Amino acid sequence: MKLAASCLQHTSHFCQSNCRWRRIPARGACQLHNATASLGQSFRSHAKNEGPAFAICNTSSRHLHPMSVSTGSQRQDLRAFASSSHPHSAGEGTQVHSLLQSFIGEVLAKYWDRTPTAVTIMGLMQSLLGGSLPIYFDHLAFRTFAVPSLGIDSIGSMFTDFGYTKMDMLSFPGKKLTAYWYAPPKDQEHLPRVFISELRVRELSPEAQKVIHSYTDSQPGQVGKHASLCAASGILPWRPPTAQDHDTLLKESEYAAWTLVNGYNLNHGAVSVHRLQGLTNGIEGLNDELLSRGFAMSEAGGILKVSPDVGLVQSSTVADQIPFKFDKGGEGMVAGSYLEFAQRAVLPQYKHLQEHEIREHHRRDGFEVGNADKIFESTAAVRSKPSAQPMAGYGKDLQMNDESGQFESAKA
Image (cartoon, rainbow, N blue to C red; front, side, top):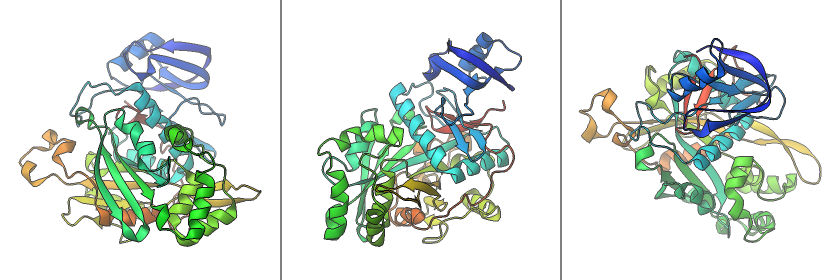
């Protein structure tokens, strides 16, 4: 389906499909529908999942579309359109609650803005895979402090309210961290897992504890209530920290310093490598490709992090640096977010299945302490610029399905 550039008046249109985009506010400069079809025809094809009906972008800094991304002078559109089924979904046709869709979409919109390397790599993968195959998220990860009113449940409750199940606990004594992962509803396994960790603040030095509590205790009982709002808006749940407080934490816990300046912003998204149709040589081949193109990969524990059962293999980029305006004047660069890659092997009892029969629940699930311990260090070594410059066209035709967490090309 060919997209044409057009300009819409301040108006609203309605999708004929029963999906998130039933009512579409359209303002400003937009890329609109099928170049040869009327608005109604485009929406009908959208309803039949024949292709994206529309994509709203905005050349100003205000993003009218949750998947609209601006990186440098180029606008990269990760367009969203609603679709509830795909070959690897166990619950085809199952509707995901619109609030959960909106929440994930807004969280990712902030992530794209803060992580230009992730946008570039998503566009690169789209190009390498031919521009028409979907890209899925394996999981989304958040960080927080284990203090009253905050902690894992402050953000985890958003997901359990919509059918996610709180699963295994993982402990990281050396980093003073605890984590839980959350599984999506069984009939919606196309949604990403969620990994939430917290810093055991009481185990830090008195000086570090004092710094953290000076921010988290500023509004007792209130901060944690709005964790999901902070994650979706990108706003810190406490006042902006001073550079001195940030540096004090950085000397003792990189995790603490990162959380103080990033709050509930998405720490990373993880691409589901085993779902990349057409990819040869798996995660090792993908890593080699990225390294050959100049992307900086985290080398903590080796580029490949492999679980003891060899069922879970992970790697990640090094976090981008982002500008931050500290309290009491002064600006500086701090560690931002990064992109991870996860490959899950088919469980032994399902080895007899044909490739087209394999679903996500047939693969190794959960997380591994040894792997995750090193993945945490992706924000310890940061870079000041994206490790490879975007190439012409990368990312422009990439669109994300809010409902499934998958990415697809607008070229259909």
